[in-house]
Image 1: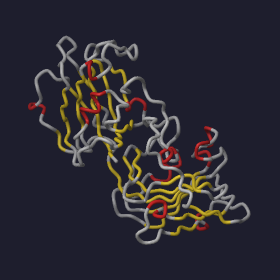
Image 2: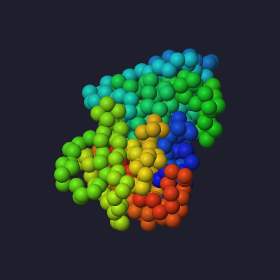
Image 3: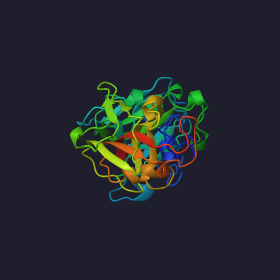
Image 4: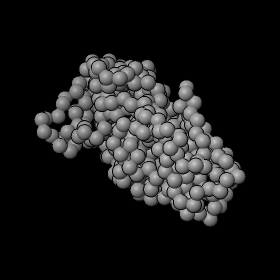
Length: 341
């Protein structure tokens, strides 16, 4: 648990919801800055019901120098477009790294409902791609279609209802019904690991008395060992364990990460995104998480792993947010910073 008062509701802004498996995302639940569905990004051609032949779907690029909603490509889908099997069609083959489950993908996208040809969402297409971890946090059709796809690839994907929002009865906020086939135009801009990468920091340089961290080399999940008999630090400790090669994160950016948290007094895990099977994201500096996170993660390069030892006054103070976190607890987190946008 890292929310300032309680764990945020597991909801995501609309621009992410049309990619994510609603209710399974680790999103912060903050709708500020959510992109509205792109009303000018699709056209539904009048026709009889069409099966999912993606050669029937056309893409019109934006005019040179277009801005705002005009920068979004137009995707034209025949009305009644449907499929029982998720399928894809590569429009342009990239030559970058191939995507694998658990990795962070940066994409530009347009989503169109096959039932009526109307767009229900898109990224901005202005150099700020949407980022997500390929796997349980997104609709199954995305993992099916994008696993193995190389960075730089542009493709069309027709997602069958069973691989989209059918099992949960649709996605009302985006106008998606339980039997709707979804058509996505996707530009895969980048592929990055779903765990900390970079240069390990020599543990001999760490301050004495810090908890020990070991990382499973296959799962990349960290384990934290605390000397529970020792007195905890009284001020925030921020110790980088692995220095990533990305840009330092800044206030106002949306961060995507994996983390594990234990209490100093017991050494027992009370929360872990790894255990839940999906990363967590939040906006740095907006006060929606405990102060120790906002303070401790600022300036950490993307791709890093960092240990935060957070005293009670920067955590939950004299409150006990759960039975696993007694009042006055010092908290220890190991955080893998995966992406920032």
